[in-house]
Length: 322
Image (tube, rainbow, N blue to C red; front, side, top):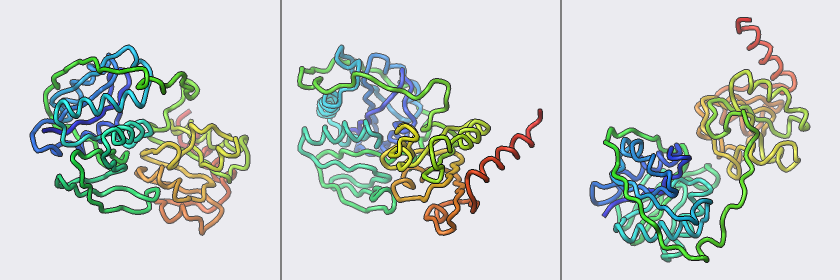
């Protein structure tokens, strides 16, 4: 028996969050093997990198109906493959896609599903540590199931190179029917071209209700550009229509792990902090010295973002050679 990891990828390059799930899954099975499932014909390109992270076999699901994401189809593939290889556990990253697929897989086999796990021990029953309440607490739990179905909290487990050889690649065509493919992605609306991805940015500069308006983000955009970073925002901003949902940092937005997170005019609700908890350093700019975000910040400036941010921009330009 082995552990099986569902790996999300882009043109054969595994997502960082999936590599983090691989790190947690290593050693979960009673045997030495660690299998990965990638969906899409280009998934075989992930074999070398996944092997370096300890995966021994990469199963590549190829089917004409899998050109677009179809959650029920993915769940069926996961369940069928786990049964075929006798997987003792199935692990994925706790992304929107990972949670969706593993929850559907759990429903198919009538087994419990544990989301946002950060540590696992034992097996039958399994002892879990997982993030709850938007990241405000850690829960110790017991999972009593024939096969553990888990997702791993993003940026809570470090991806680690195990120095292994390239994994063996085993393509297969899963049996799918019309019902499996009834729900599928028909269109993707991406972020404007040329920007830095919010999830991958090393620096993120966000603003909340304190920006005052969509136009109030001008300074935030300038600072992000000077630092080579991405622009984010709070949920209140997306509700007001000042920025698109793709810019939202938080529990219901994007979870980020930059080297520096600059939070401007953001109060710091639990849901927002759940999205930026992975940041290595947080700088908070707020007029309220009692704002909750200050308790989680490494650095703080008490002041109006419309005065502080332009001053920071001016100092950065001054310090750079012309």
